[in-house]
Each structure stands twice: as structure tokens, then as C-alpha cells.
Image (tube, rainbow, N blue to C red; front, side, top):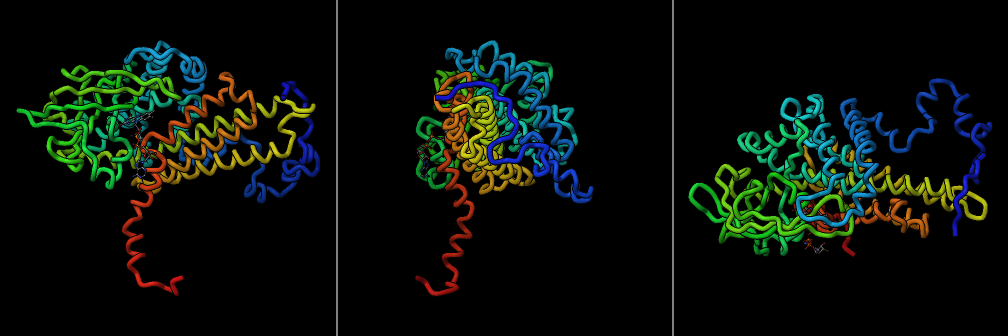
Length: 465
Ligand SMILES: Cc1cc2nc3c(=O)[nH]c(=O)nc-3n(C[C@H](O)[C@H](O)[C@H](O)COP(=O)(O)OP(=O)(O)OC[C@H]3O[C@@H](n4cnc5c(N)ncnc54)[C@H](O)[C@@H]3O)c2cc1C
């Protein structure tokens, strides 16, 4: 049983006291300036020190997102998590206020540069998904539910941008962005998942045998959509949903993306799920009962939906990996804080070296996960195997770090106000959405398939065992 008491620390077990001749900080101060310029010893914020490696424009994205999260997410993170499950389309007053603040402060229209959106024009020189990865990590580090409420909108915008159709951009994206700039959040959502088709149809193998549940039938001047989509983040709040449907009588190769506006006749939100974590973000079931959309609502061309979906996922899995980093960070911070303020046998927990070893491992695993995200995010062209590897590795790391944090906190880990159990619940969802982690592992191999086949065909370089 642990007790909590503030013990004024002089030094931690196993370390020379700060300020003593043998402490590295004191010793480093005596080195020539040239050496100090090469080898730094400065006790910086563990999560902040990487910021200097970013361009000034990306540093700004990071600082802005962090300030936003501290100001708007932190005060309500715990209360929105335990708010009773409300009817679809009613996220609650606190979440609505966060959405309005995000709209006002340019967090909902930042996938386009000014004057079309809110992103600084300098960010055009940066890889497309780096700002999203930085922003997502900062939001996730403070609250997973509100983070997803905001991030799912970017997922809805992505296929509209990647479809490369200026008309669709003008008709569907810019009006939503202009409303956001006025402080009226207008969200978009992305709908691929169906009751009988999730990540299992996200690879070619699964898609080859899948029977599409949502279909589009030709009608004069457009298409009639029928079917259901499920687990659509923010689908009950969105002013428009990008819906992937197969053409009637055809298989998944005919998948096509359609923009379906809220209010289209026959389009209905049937329910939102009561779920384990990220409760401030809704997962909606959507029903399409002979919904008519005109030809102008086809995004990226008929039968290009399959490719468009894969392109979106190859990018969006990078911010999802960044969610893992944010959760690992938050769990590590909570564990450090707890171990510093909790004593066992008269000593602070952090004074025990096995606790120090655990915390050091959590810090290192989180930093390594971030390095993986940043490497994937800094590519100009998203690479499937890197995005998928970052997604499964970083979200698995988040769970592993959360588990260790829970072990350190003991029974306190189960208390809502300590936040760790909430981070754990929120993080668990990231192993499932955007393709399960198993599927993402298979995506890495899928990407390497031609190379692996070539290796199999190549003459052996040595004796076969
Ligand atoms: C909080 C949340 C938000 C979401 N938001 C959205 C959203 O906004 N839009 C959207 O379209 N969807 C969304 N989803 C759905 C999500 O993307 C799917 O739930 C996810 O891809 C998993 O699909 P599934 O649930 O159908 O599981 P399945 O794909 O059916 O998987 C079931 C099991 O089979 C395994 N499996 C699947 N394929 C293979 C294979 N080829 N080989 C071996 N094993 C395999 C899986 O790993 C898993 O263990 C969301 C889900 C959640 C939980």
C-alpha cells in the first residue's frame, strides 16, 4: 500500500546529488565551450527537446496545438469522458465549445493554406502530414476523446482533397472551411466500414472475396445509395460524409467515393455506440435508404474508390501513430508525477531504482515511437509500409507504456481522476481503428510482396538448409 507525502528530495538513490562535483551537469559546465556546444547537458522538458529539430513553421504548429489542448481540452477531459451517452448529434455543451474554439482558432480548416484554409503558407513547403502528426500528438497527450472528435474531421476532408477534383473542393470543402473560419464548426466524416466489412476488406486479399454491403445504382443524373456504414467517427455531427460504395452488381473493384450531404433524403443516423474509450467522439451507424446523389457528388472518378481509400489510409495512419505517441507521453507523465509524489516505506517511489529503470524505459520507448512517426511524416510521398509500421508499432507502444504506468500506480491506476485508466481505454481503440494492427502488419508485407517474390525466385546464394 502506498501513501502520499511530499518528501523534500536531495538526490535519488543511485545518483550523485545535483550540484556535486560528480553530477554530469556540474561537470559539463567546466568543459570548454566547443565541447559544450557539441554535447549538451540541459534538463529540458522531455517532450519539448525534439522541437528544435523541426522547422520554424512546424515548431509553431506544435506550440499552437499544445496551447490549444492545455486551454480547451485539459479542463474538460475527465468530465466529457463520464458524460452520459447522449442522443446522436448531441455531443454535449463542453464538446461543442471545444469544436467552436477549434473552428475559431483554425484547427478545423488547417489542411489548406490561407486564404482557403488556416494553414500558414510556409507549411506548403512541409510534407503534407507532418503538421497533422504534430497536432494529433499534442491533442492526444491531453485528451483522446476530444482529439478524435477533431481529428476525424481531417479524415473526412482527406479524400476530398486527394480526389484531385477542384469542383468538389469548391462545392464541399471550402464552404465548410469558411463556416469554420466564422467560428461555426462544420465537420466532415469518412465512411468505409460496414457491419460485415472493416479492415478485412482493406487489403486486396480480403476485398477479393468481400460482398459489398453499400451499393450505388445508376439513376438519371446521378446515383442511388443503399446500405449501412458503422463506427463512423463524427458521422452524426457531420454536414457531409464521404461514403464508399460498390456499383450495383459489381465487386469491391468498383468501389467509388460519394459525397453525401447531411439532410439528403433517405440518409439517417441510426445510433451512436457506447464504447470503451474516446467517449467524447461519437461512432455513428449511418443508414442509406435509396439516397440520391448527383454525378457531381462522385469523388475522384467511378471505380477509383479503392485506390482513393488506400491513399487516404497511407497518410492518415501517420497521425494515428502520433496518437500512440501522445498517449504514451501522457501515461509516462502521469507515472512520473505519481512516483514523485508517492512514498513507499518512507521513500518516494522514484527513489527506488527498479522504478527508475521502468520510467527510463517508458521515456525511451515513447521517444523511439515519436522518431518513427516523424521519419514517416517527413516523407513527401507517404510510404505504405512505413505508415502501417508506424501505426501498429506506436499504438502497441502506447498500450505497453500505459500498462507499465498502471503497474507503477497500483490501485491508483484504476481511479478516474488519475487519468491513466482513461488513457489506457482511449489508447486501446487505436489498435483497432484505421485497420486493426494485425491488418497493418499485413500491409507491410503486402508492400514488400514483389520484393519477397523476387527473392523467392532468385537463385540461392548459399547451401539451403
Ligand atoms: C473508435 C472508432 C472509430 C472509428 N472510426 C471510423 C471512421 O471514421 N470511418 C470508418 O470507416 N471506420 C471507422 N472505424 C472502424 C474501424 O476502422 C474498423 O473497426 C477497423 O478497421 C476494424 O474493422 P472491423 O471492426 O470490421 O474488424 P475486422 O476487419 O472484421 O477484423 C476482425 C478480426 O480479423 C482480423 N483480420 C482482418 N483481416 C485480416 C486478414 N486479412 N488476415 C488476418 N486477420 C485479419 C483483424 O485483425 C481482427 O482481429 C472506427 C472504429 C473505432 C473503434
